[in-house]
Length: 477
Picture 1 (cartoon, rainbow, N blue to C red):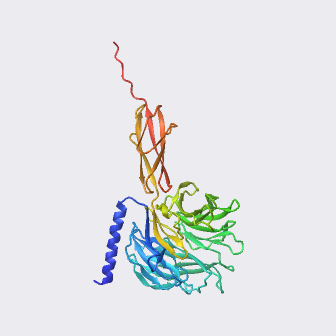
Picture 2: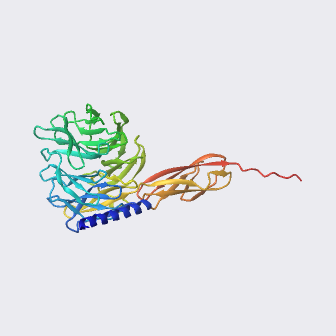
Picture 3: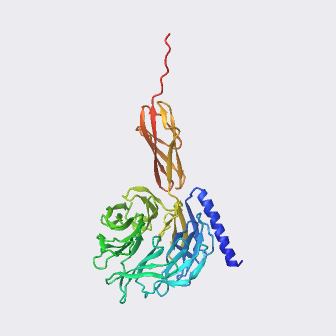
């Protein structure tokens, strides 16, 4: 048996054990240092991807060449493999790394600005060489965004070409092995920098491409349905704002935008559309800064919720980097929780610039803590386990004047936790467990709000029924 096969089997065994342990263990939020300015070469962590058992992290080496590496980590953010060199040079470092069900696909732009795909196995080894995908000319001002589409079993890329006869907005569908399945110009206009194309794919296979229109400057949506029919472009907002991001959850496209608000302040607005382009949730404020500036970084989510990583700067981004936070919310825009992304409060301003992933238990991403322009930065992996509380009562049918004990079990978040109870009878309490005595019969819903050390909250309820006890008969004398 060759050394390479032995190494692959060893890595897969480590991943299997790690996945089993992680599944059995409670999710614990974590801030893990993985690269530091004090050790050269410093490889700054970038995009991440989750396979179901292992986290792939693409890295950019500091220096003018922007060399690219990739390494694997387990669910507890411990290194499984050493860094593997992908490219000696690039124009902007790694752009995206995606899991396609069999392997990882790492996308970047070479020193010639052409888009390249490097396949990486689940054991962290390179599969073949980097592929130019597809073979258009590369210009520094071109933009692209790529996602994995499970309905087509292919990568879907939206890109602009800003020079030459091919100028415009393009849709490209790329096989796992890098072969081009489709390469079509879907919007012909004098493309220029700032179109900022973003692509997302709904559960039923509808591709949505959002971009800033070169002529109207409106945020515009182009849809390609599962039958590959291209539908007419429709404006979805009068302006894309100062920055924006999109994501598809089930059959809904979600859009977050940073918009000027109240003179010198900014806000984040939320808009949701279905796969036909119809409005699900009208354009509304999602977040406003606690001070001056707030801006979205990445919109993601899971089967139950939307999640947004964002930066909140009380003094403004030109003065202060601000706090890096995670906002969880419903499709209607209702808040589930809002908290620091990192459980380490001393690293609240370690900022991420890439999308995060959902592992089934936690949100995970990379973040960079810049000390100074001269000293450089440290890189971290952040695992954020959303706080989830479950309320319980020692009994749900209670005799009048008989005390009941309430408690709340908590998973995720960052301890210690604070428990606030509303017993439903205009009485309140703190702690867990906590005892309460009802003075009137009826049905009551006890509500507990659990707050963790990072500011995350979770609300849970339990219903109890208070009844009169049977009166003891009195024997006449």
